[in-house]
Length: 186
Image (cartoon, rainbow, N blue to C red; front, side, top):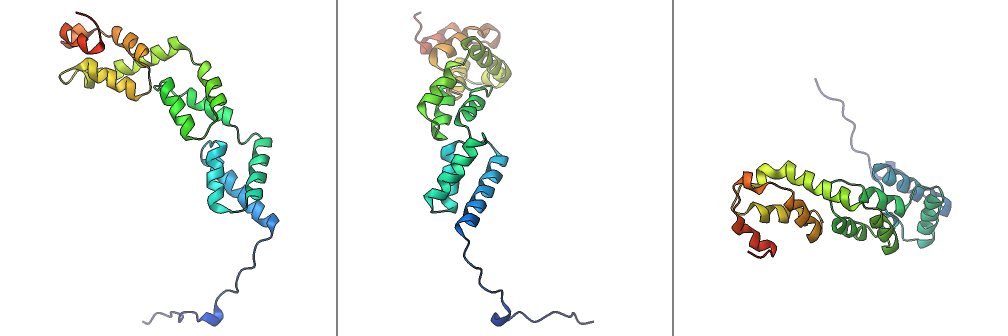
């Protein structure tokens, strides 16, 4: 049995060329794209501006969309900073770095970081250490591994030292000689 395939369409049967979009249609398409992007994840104004710039070269359209989304409270850098600041298991340095990468202004970053509770941050760092203790204890210097883990997560040196003081190193077989790397005197 032969299949009844149609011959390929010739150029004369192709779709007619699309007409250029009007400025209102361009703005509407840009707004729809921005809403889809914001539905996927929370974006800062700078991140969304970058995405919109890839879609349109018209700065007035981009400004209009950003202004309208800000007006509707769909775009809020302060909210992005609050959410990033509330993530568990990362320190203030990491929060600052991520917000700068996302294009959030320094004033908003400062406001978000001022709301951090130092005791809560210490508790989170200690909790992270306890969760990772089995992998940290393997190796030559568990304190150095623990320090490195917390430093990579964005915790500051003083906070790391306080968190390390809360670990019972004697149960891990760690000797007192390993304290020298922390800058402590013998």
